[in-house]
Image 1 (spheres, rainbow, N blue to C red):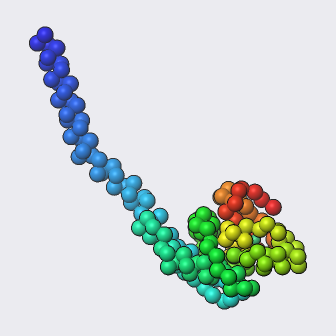
Image 2: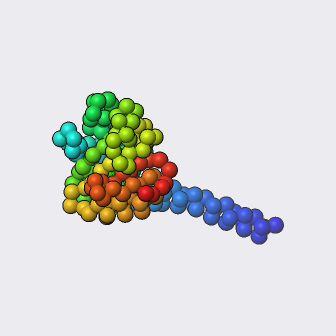
Length: 187
Ligand SMILES: [Zn+2]
C-alpha cells in the first residue's frame, strides 16, 4: 500500500512537472514558427497595364487582412479598358498572381494585356479575335492575360502550370500567358 502510494505520488509529480515544462517550453516552440510565417503577413502585387500605361505596386494584404484601398486600385488597373467598367478582381486570382510572381523571382511587374472584360467587350473580342472564349473567366474578374519583362514566355507558362492553381493558356504568337482562378486546366 505504501509502495503504491509512493508510485502514485511520483506519477503525479511527474505529470505536474511535465505540465510546468510544457508551459515554459511552449513560447520557445512557437517563436520560430511565427518567424517563418512573418514574410507571408505582407503580400503585394505589381501590375503594369500596357493599354492604359497605369502602373501599380501595392500591398494588398497586411496583418492578416486584405487592404480595401489596395483591392480598389487593383480592380481599377485591371478594369475593362474598352469601356472603363470596373469589376471586383476575385481574391483567389490575386493570390494566384502573387504566388506566380514569387515563383518567377522577379522585381518586374506583370505586364497586363487583359484583366476584367465586360460581357459586351468579351463578346466583341470573341467575334473578332482568335482564342477569345465566349464564356471567358475574364467576365467574372477571374482571369488575366500577362507577360513578364526579362522572363521568357515559356518560363512564365511553365511556372503557372506547376502551381496547379487554375487555368493556364499559352499564346506565344500574341506573347502572353492567360492565367485564371477557375478549375485546373491547360491549353
Ligand atoms: Zn485570357
